[in-house]
Amino acid sequence: MRDTAFPTTANRVIRATLVVIAMFGAFGCGDDDDGGSNDGGPAAGRSGSGGRGGRGGSAGAAGAAPIEPLPDKTAGKTCKADDDCGTGMCLASLPGAFGGQMMEAPGGYCSGSCMTNADCGEGGACSGAFAGIGGIGATVGRCLKSCTDSTECRDGYRCVNGLGMPVAAAGDAGAPMNPGAGLLGGNTCAPLPATDKLADGIVGSMCGADGDCGDGRCMTMATATTYPGGYCTGSCLEDSDCGAKGSCTPGLVGGVGTCYLSCTTDADCDRDGYRCRTSGNRMQCVPGAAPLPDGVVGNACTGDAECGGAAMSCGARLGRYDAPGGYCTQRCVNSTDCGTGGVCVGGMGGFGAGAANGTCYTGCTDASGCREGYTCGPAGRTGTAAMQNICSVTPPPPAEDAGI
Image (cartoon, rainbow, N blue to C red):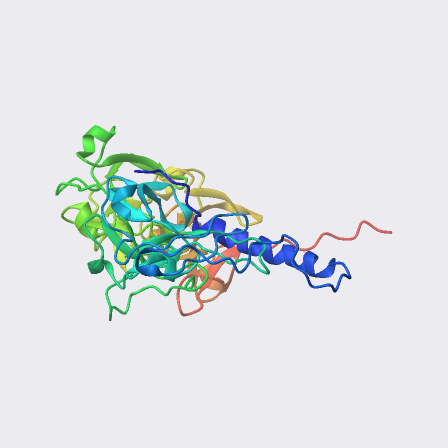
């Protein structure tokens, strides 16, 4: 079997863009010869060799040999050697989603060079081919087994669209669109990414090393977020990979996802430093500070202990200004992080490193609800439908002119 170079989706998109740019220069800088003879440009018009059954193949890219079509129902077959694939080749690996790292092709994968679907025989589809513009930038693709959903792929494979994203079964409202159809090819059978199979009760557990997480791994940091005490997780494609009470957050562009402990309230997380947060259409236990105690937000303070004890909860500044007398606050995702009477301004409403980037303020209805040095005014972005007022620092008067 071969580990053959394969034009990735990302490279194909970039190459197509560069060819278009190059063509603007080519069209603008041609000579004035109107003789019309073809003097050794791209090998246009060459007929490919007949494949089995006498089909004519496509011309290859400029300077390449004509393409010999695959026999019918050969693309995607199991194989151990090229001879098992008729006129094609036996591949040991295929690229991951959107040009990701190469993945092992279980049982081998019959493929062949192509410029059109006709080069791939019945049941095959040409992926990655680009005819170029005026013969410039032509790229030979590879034959893959075509599919409409994963039931048409053999064990160890799934049906993906032109961007490498999994294709849902027919009639599933969640089936992804295929914006790459035509340019990047149709749906094809690709290897399933490797996943972990966590035992029940593992996901979300405290850990110090991968060995503490069975078949999974110990996550202590991800996307700039620290996981206090470690967090047992694993790679996944579906919730069943994560064990009981686990759920899978999908990866980017069809890649593997990450297992998290499911929850409905903070009590389900049962660990200090973790909160139950919204992730898409589900709730999962992820790092998060405990809420401020009720009625504390906005109080005057000189130290964190007066605000509940969380680090940096006694703020000396709010926004651009010093906070007169100190101000009990903390970073937040939503107003539940701020305790009774608090409003989260600027929270993202989800989880992760960029989610808890809001700030807790005390809510108000008029100036009487704010202490001296603070003004009751609109909160701006709070993540709620209704506009809310908050007590924020009264801006200092503008500096007097120094005199001119």
